Image (cartoon, rainbow, N blue to C red; front, side, top):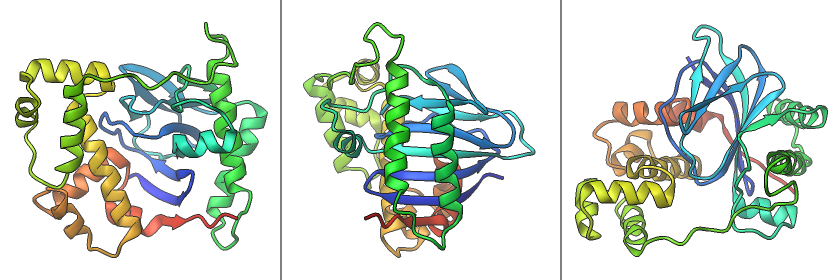
Length: 279
């Protein structure tokens, strides 16, 4: 069974220590996403249908809205992983870079000695919850910066490339994104959304995936996960009530959804989550 060893929330986004022993479903995040092996068996992260190893010396970088999932290789022994969900706006401010998104050049990241020290420093700090760590944010920025820079090395853009601009989107896709956000807590049929924005179902799914990078279903699930995490960490609302407000018929169905998209049950995530107090 997968478990959350420690979860920190802050201006940077989220950083989690997960003991992972189950395969997840394809999903995506608004944030830049980095996964590092800390100890235990090797695993795999599948990105757009291609498997990348999660192992000592090998990390995985995932760009915002890039579909992916973790695939457990050893179902008996958990893999301890440090998982970063970095808000692009925080990274751009912290790194003083001028670009529109935290988009990585490639998924495979070599964990150099420098990056390994940052990974294990963050993992150690998260495990020692009795002492506030004022260097956590600096290490997260250095770790993200190091992976970001490395991901663009040996590409046609070169190491100095600072990311691609935000794509312009068809007005019908923009309208669909607005509808999904506004009706997140309502029963929502994606076929109805397609008709509302003036597209047939096949054209809607094709255009949405081309311009957003993921299917409407994955995008909607991501929005629900974001709202669920905000409610779990920012309120005392009962888990069942949060699930019902997000359109789930029962706490059990909400928990199954949360586990499939976020490793652990919502109640476990809430107990593990801490707000990082950074100077």
